[in-house]
Image (cartoon, rainbow, N blue to C red; front, side, top):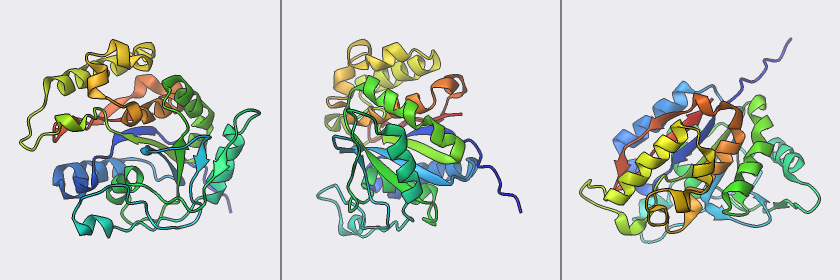
Length: 260
């Protein structure tokens, strides 16, 4: 009996929205269709805007409760479950790839998936039957995050789906209820789309200075930061990129990208 070789997986950057994402039929349908179009992963490695921890931390490798890291929402959002299997073998691979002299890796075995991880996964893989591992962002420095992505890239050849989960624009003061989009959000989204298409990594790395109103589109950069892990993991395949999801939700760009 022969064992099938896992397909080389793409690398993704997706906009995870807020818990009410589950109420947006368009968006949930887009995420489900995206997952259906991907090869089936052997495991999923999530890097979410909502977990910053230094040194880099590896989350639970068993099924533990989710992290409801939001406040003031209706009760049913705190009752969502996603009991995906843990991924201890993937965790060991991550340790081997990232741990080096002067670069420790820590384990936080009771840290469950936060909403940047489980909200999109509920829509993409609702059966929760694929092992999932979340690791922290130890820094918001784009260059350092891109280097982490480069080191993680070999996992793609083992069938691991690497997902950076953030939001392409993220300024809560620019949220809208009527579908309108502030010009700053639209201009940043357009600039980022063009920079990606041109493979202008230098501009993206320096987005706070080079993008139109970069510091207003991202007053704090944690939601753009996961993109750089994805870019590092897909550095050799930037030409293959495509925006699978675009447009806006409550005034924020939900641009989501696939490489490979």
